Each structure stands twice: as C-alpha cells, then as structure tokens.
Image 1 (cartoon, rainbow, N blue to C red):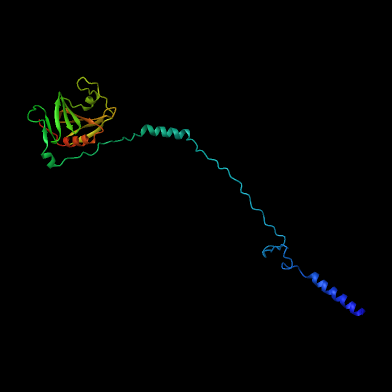
Image 2 (cartoon, rainbow, N blue to C red):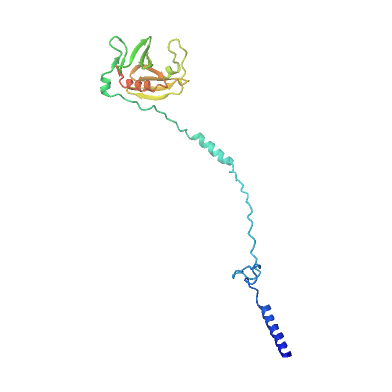
Amino acid sequence: MKKITLFLILSFSILNSQFSARPVLAQDAPNINVTKRRPDRPVGYSPAPSPTIQPVEVKQVEPASPSFFARLWTWLKSLFTPPIASTTSASPTPTASTDQISNWKTYPDATIIGLPYLFKYPTSVEISEAGDFVYLKIGNSEIRHRFVAKTKNISSLMGNYQPFASPKIIFSSKVPITIGLLNGYQTTTIDGMDTYLFLGNDSFNGILVFSYPSANTELKSALNQILQTFKFTN
C-alpha cells in the first residue's frame, strides 16, 4: 500500500512540473494580448522619434541702388542719344472705280469761273454755296470746303485759322497726309468734334480746306474718294 501511494505522489509531481514548464500560448489564454515582434528588430527595440521640421523665414532681398558712377553714365548717355521719333500716318485712302467716277458730277460747273481746280463728286451729293464756303451734303450731314488763295504756308494758316468773324479755331497735333496730287496735314479741333484737312501743292498757289464731323466715317470715306479726282485747271 505504501508503495502504491509513493508511486502516485511521484507521478503527480512529474506531471505538475511538466505542466508548469510549458509556455503559455495564445489559444490557452484568449484574454492575454500577445504582440508579435518583427524578426529584423531585436528585443527591446524602440523606434526613434520623427524629426521636427522647423519653419524657415525667407527674407526678400532688395536690389541694391545703382552707384553714383552708374547714374552718371546713364545721364551722360541720355545727353548724346537722340530720342526715337514716333511717326503717325493717316489711314489708307479708299478709291472709287473708273465706272463710278464716269457718272459723277464736276465742281465747279460751267457757271463758276476763276477757280484754278476742279473735282468730281457722286450724283447723290447735294452742293450749295454760302460766301467762300462750299457745302457737300451727304445724308444728314455735310462736308465743308473753302479755298484760301495766294498762300502756300499751311502751318501759318492752321495757326491763325479764323474764317470771317468767327473765333479762332484751335487744333490739336497734325498728321502729314497725301491724297492724289495734294499733300498737307490732317488735324482735329481741340475738342475732337471736327476733322480738318489743309491741302496744297508746290505748283499750286492756294490752300484747300475741308472739314467734317470726326464721328462720321461715311463723310471721311466720301471725301477721300472725291479728292482722288482733284485736278488743276491753271
């Protein structure tokens, strides 16, 4: 009996030691949180903290002011460098066909004697005269024409243009212009309301003055076509 009892005690002790030495598995303890370790990291590995990026203040560098000698050189160059002249030319002149002109009327007609020139105009244009002025009515507006005899100085006439007893007309800048046989200047009144053409020729002792409302492009086109027919009679 004692041998049996001793055998049972030894067997129980051996089984108990084996049970205690066996490792605890996840399936044996479902409530234990088991963290798996990466094979490339040793025991006790702790990742390094992420670097902190500090903001960098960007300062705008102002360009250095030119030196005294650089300013002096720029000033000297401006004294000896001629300015670039701006050139302005009038728009291209539209022309009428020969068939159109063949049916046009002629001014002056046979009843007017003494004018050293003539030009043609469309049959739809109505012409009337008042003193030294000739009016070419086109639609609801008109072209005004005046002949100033015995002078060739267009600039002088433009600077003192005062027809009859009317106030002196002030003009803005003038633009050189050539139409057919005539050349001179195109300009506008200082308020921009009216356009004036002062035209002449080296062999012609007189100046032709034409004017019309600046906003009326129909009159501008008609006048350019009429002046293409201009001829000297003396």
